[in-house]
Length: 539
Image (cartoon, rainbow, N blue to C red; front, side):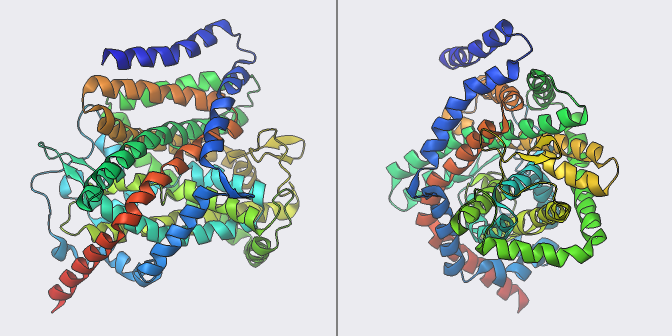
């Protein structure tokens, strides 16, 4: 443990020294310059191309999702109504309770159970409540900043491929969340530990690949920790900083660092101090903000209903004949759409199965069915709403699709004389139709960021526990590292942060897919078992 603490000090000492020796002016740029080589290194490795413009990880994600969709007979369509019935509680009598006692995902070692999409709550949460909690946690900056980034880089056509990715991702999410429940680990105190780490190690051992299972489980845990630092953390604080600086008209080149410090303190109070009151407030406010965001999107869409068919036509035509500057071809716009959709709904990364594994049920496939609804709601519905708002807004010719004016590929566009990127683009679109919406959207982005960071701190911590044990000292080291990345994300540029975040999230796909490819027959067996039970109950 002493070595772990020393390693942590060795990692943060340069950053602290750097902060002391640098004046406020230029602080953010210097942090960004220090972080860019790290971001580029990981991005180049993870997104290696098998042919020009097509990273292998995207191809793997698409082909595996397509395979699962075909193998399971299009579960995203065939079982959609069944999934809704599961959520409605129609089959609650069939499922019963698979675990004795009260499995609580997130109550040990100072963690905040109620801020995580755990779906257990002492085994008393219905499938509907579970899905509502999961979706409210998923809706966030991937839907706001990610969609804006996709359209800025790939044009309206990127939306079409985001929708396709969301539909295919439903099948992948179904498979991984079923396995998460099937191979979960139950601690002596009833605490549930689940996710790819466990179905890789236990599931592959069951298939006779013990060594491969151990290796891939460790690799996944390492990447999941990286994902918690990147997409689940730095990318969130980055976008929170973007909208805060825009709202407050802050131009200081060192402001990001100090905003990051404030965010880190807030998140630290929750994940280290275990302040349940703050967590309970966040739990109630974030779903409210998510609903308000959806209502605001619908208000703009229906207020400009005559333009909706034009926007949809543009989405379809630009998907196959892209005219956005710099996107290149159909492959280019497809890759932009798939990357942003996968980042938003996390299908294929395996992270969601960590949370879903805690549900109380005798049938693992029941939770898989519930989970397949998430990419549909998150990507097909909410991401499309954001896209329509931005496209309708840009019928006014405010910016040029694909004309990235940034130096780091962050999809910045020129609106008037102002360079805008990410959530800032969405904010401009909202402001065109809703007075003072910039205040609302800033609050929403910050709350979504904090909520996502808390959730991902749990994902990363579970992976950290898998690697280093379940001791409090090891947990503290992880949490301090996590908070360091809050500051880095706020200070560094969007380009370097999102490149790193994408790399970390998509890195999880490699080991996770090993488990899904080896274990998908188990899912089919469990699905049949669940359907047999439903049929028996209906006789």
